Amino acid sequence: MSLQDFPSQLDELTAAAQQAFSSAADADAVEAARVEFLGAKSGRLKAVQKGLGAIPPADKPAAGQRFNAVKQQVEAALAAAQERLAAATTATALVGYDTTTPGTPLTLGHLHPITQTIEELKDIMGRLGFSVAEGPEVEDEWHNFEALNIPAAHPARDPLENFYLATLEASGGRKLPVVPGVEETGGLRPPLAMAERGTAPTMLLRSQTSTVQIRVMEHTPPPVRIISLGRVYRPDTADATHYPMFHQIEGLLIDRQVRMADLKSVLRLFAASYLGHDVHIRFRPSFFPFTEPSVEVDMQWGQGWMEFGGAGMVDPHVLRSVGYDPDEVSGFAFGLGVERLCARRHHVTDIREFYKNDVRFLHQF
Ligand code: PHE
Image (spheres, rainbow, N blue to C red):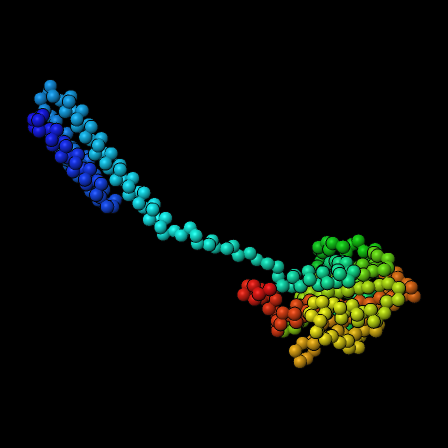
């Protein structure tokens, strides 16, 4: 090759390379052009570079400079093509993404319907001046039975009707778990006294929240105006209106000259506040060992009536067992099923739904 041919050959090559790179429509075309012009083995620049050998030595520096300038131009054309394609790819990606689309909302959970009901019932009774008291779910027989006027031979204490826990003897001397609140009982005949009589205290899962009436009265001089909401346990077969664990709302009011009329007024107000003013409630004469007189409280449900719990005037024996003077004070107590109240309010026909934890059901509250 002569030096005269060299510049025109390089101009042609530069033009061809720039054309190839600027018209390359995709990554494959860019790569093909790269191999054609810049390929290390048989690229066209390589061929020109090989031809440099034939240039007379005096012209070599000028030819070398010229060649390097061309090589840089071709490489710049490649870089420009790559940049153009990358920008196009980003643009395409942005076209496919609609930045005005609303985001996916986070699904937040909420409180269980029974918990919601408990909060609302506390609120209603709070407005009537009742404060909230609590007691343990693992109870001794004194608070679950004896202090409530349910003596040892009473059928309500039958092992088939209650969830008794293993006693110290039965558990071979193993220590029972410590139950908060049980040891601090300051009553007249707390479980300690039974232990002194030679029997270890028998514990059970409380079958009613009336236990809390005793716990409160043991510690508080009258007047008393409390409610207590919590779980109770009975070995009942689960059906539409029963469950072996359910919740009760217990109410207790002790003061001078409390009458049955006060009980009825409070329960009517309570039912109207929670279920609506058109709700009908009725009281049926009944019997509980710890109230006299006693009633069962029914609420209208469709064409019929549903029992919601029991109530009555606190029996003088109970007042005496906690150190109150029945000639000075009287009071009323009631205990109603929370699941049934919630079911009646929301037209749920089977309380087992509350414990299946099917989110499709729970979602509706
Ligand atoms: N404790 C009773 C029950 O569980 C209900 C009740 C409470 C009745 C208070 C009278 C007074 O059936």
